[in-house]
Image 1: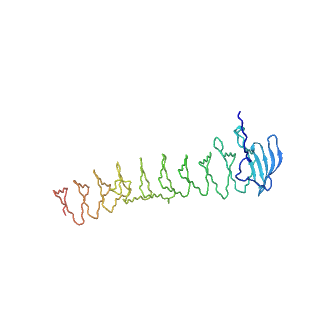
Image 2: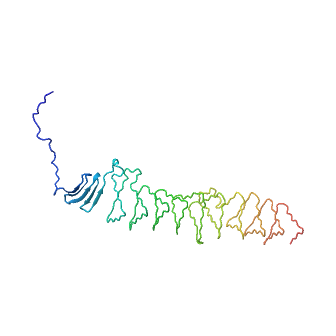
Image 3: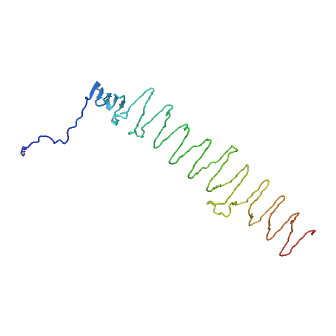
Length: 344
């Protein structure tokens, strides 16, 4: 074993102090007054007073499991349970209260915070009421903030208010076996597309004889009907076509065009008229039949030209009359045939 030599110089202190020692000065001392100490659960009841500019005193009841009740000198009351420990069971750290009713009055703001902790369903607050649940915020506003809000009513859900507004930054969906709305006036403002899709019947009924349906659109209007289309008008029916710009109809030769793949009929029980401030042209690649059960009148304030490859005028009594003169001209023969021919 090697021999160790003694030091020639020994230190006079442990370390060289860089700053002075910190001191906490109390005007008085921290005082305790113990009333009770239990040896079974190590519980105790005592008074505590902390000195300082404002002395704070409290009556504390410390129970087992780090839970305590503190009644403070400033009038506050604090209750704290111990921490939840799985080794002590699922009821550890819980506060259980059972009463036959309660009445609370809070004269200042109340802040309540609930945490889900290690709950499997992630529920922070679960309230079960065997009866009505009534909340009344007098003169204030009720705010509910959540990522998702579900209102589930097995019988009936009523939203009632002087003014009800539903606002959404995304879609608003309504679904039900039957949806009924009742209002005095209804107004829809749609800045984009409005589309209705369904296989049911669409019926609009108006009972007021003063009611009017107006469609104002700066664009085009298109109706596609796969089957029959019927209109019944009790008053007059009028269509005015300007013939301006548009993008729905490609062939813009005519301002108004009526076409059908089969027969076309237009008539009236009293009379039918075709009026125009410009020329009227009736053209067909086949036969044109103008017939009347009584009289047929074709009149003109100007010149009327009738031309055909073969022209035949037939009648029981046929009369050709001119108020000024009548000229019969032909590049070929002129033939007049009759039982008796009267000239003059």
